[in-house]
Image 1 (cartoon, rainbow, N blue to C red):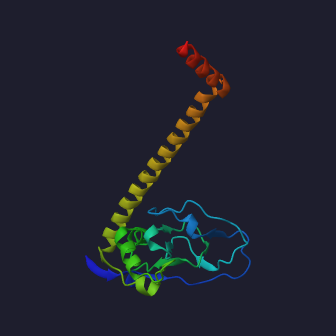
Image 2 (cartoon, rainbow, N blue to C red; image 1 turned 135 degrees about the vertical axis):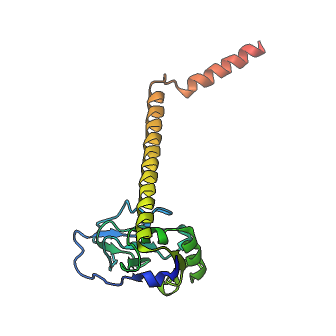
Image 3 (tube, rainbow, N blue to C red; image 1 turned 180 degrees about the vertical axis):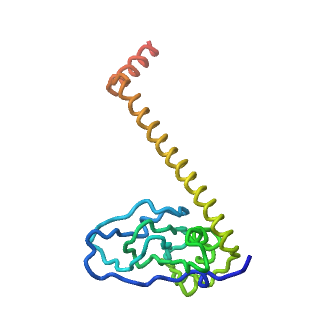
Length: 202
């Protein structure tokens, strides 16, 4: 394996769209899920100031408050917040399917936090982030590794989805159970308590 820097295998995409945004999907920091390489939400609100373009396959890295660990691969073309760095693979240097996992890892986020500037809302610049060093295997090995990681990610997402659905089912059953209970007024219970105390005194 060879030691390379992030800037050797990827670039920051800087194209912008200042025209009509009708039908264009919008991604803000709020749409990136911490520690999740999959982008599952976005917006199509044209009333925004975002102009930074990204393409399908780019990695959207949350450069503000990097400790939140927000980075995901774009499943479509769109526009994103200025607080997102658009990272694009140099395809003859790294497998584009592997790059999202190179970005979405604790070592890179720790590095990003250390290179961030600002107190209230720290941000890291690409000029700093691109210095992150990694051990990179050969292209054939990268492809195998990417395939394995995406398979694991798919299983993880399916498991989380199952947990969420189970949680919703339990909640609905709990609510249904309470609906079937006999409803009595609080005053009835208070009256019963008073009668009990009176009887105790007698």
